[in-house]
Image (tube, rainbow, N blue to C red; front, side, top):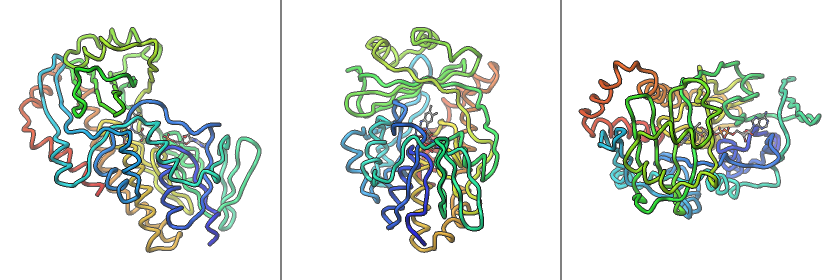
Length: 380
Ligand SMILES: Cc1cc2nc3c(=O)[nH]c(=O)nc-3n(C[C@H](O)[C@H](O)[C@H](O)COP(=O)(O)OP(=O)(O)OC[C@H]3O[C@@H](n4cnc5c(N)ncnc54)[C@H](O)[C@@H]3O)c2cc1C
């Protein structure tokens, strides 16, 4: 086959990782991106040991670790700062040799971008159509151009056009909660290797993660009530004012005027859609998940890597037809588990919330750790 007749649609984490793997194996894929610049959306990201295992194998660990923060633990607190659980990331690192890290998304993007041939990336190419004639896929762009390829990899995110137009129309599922995110300077009082999550009894959560370079990444989650999109930074801080512990250090040193606040309603796909014919879907395009396990981008990276591994011992056609089978169980498990955690934290009635908190408090740490490790090690 002609190694240049492969198209990757989307220059996010999943698309760039696919390009990295295909180029490593001698293919010369073209990557198209609808935006006029390749960018990430500015906040932080947690990358589990499953990602770092892949990154080590792909020689990406060292460049990433120039920026990323290796974490020893994720502490779980109630809203007044009493401990309700702990995930031991140091132990996981010692057992597997792979760290769990948090990093600014723009750094992750930079590292991936530097690992690929940028001369075959075309910006301002928004795919608006795809049809198949015999063995050829014809791709149509919004700018009026069209091109032919033998294979197309859709890495065009949650609202994938490739998925809807070609693979399978899958409705999005509104998770019922919203998220604000920001990156700011790390208050001196915060431990650089310890991250924390705070859960209240009114369906709100806060996460604080050191991401290296003396910055922290915070996410604020709340059950949708309506009108959240219009809230400014001051209103958001007011909404979360009852949280104590490290959150108060963040608020005290936060310069809201100099900090970008991102807002997303949370959604995932109502079912997984991984492949059809000569098209595969990688990342959120095929298996978007809610962010409760911090595994969305991780799954995209795993899928790109898994496809590359299939290509090592199969023809391109063979790898495309095996891809779904190889990834279905893993992505389904994470999506279901993550959705369950979201429901537990945001979609239960006020009557059950104290019960949930009590259960969380009495659940042995070893059980939480086992569940957490299962999610991570399932990607090994
Ligand atoms: C609040 C929140 C927190 C999260 N935290 C974590 C975390 O800690 N760890 C983790 O692993 N994951 C996390 N995730 C999930 C993670 O952000 C996503 O899974 C990941 O970014 C998806 O990457 P992607 O490359 O598949 O898609 P995207 O990042 O959405 O990239 C898709 C790309 O395709 C381009 N595109 C779209 N349509 C077209 C088109 N028609 N033509 C051409 N180009 C197109 C877009 O411009 C974009 O560049 C989180 C998600 C959310 C919402």
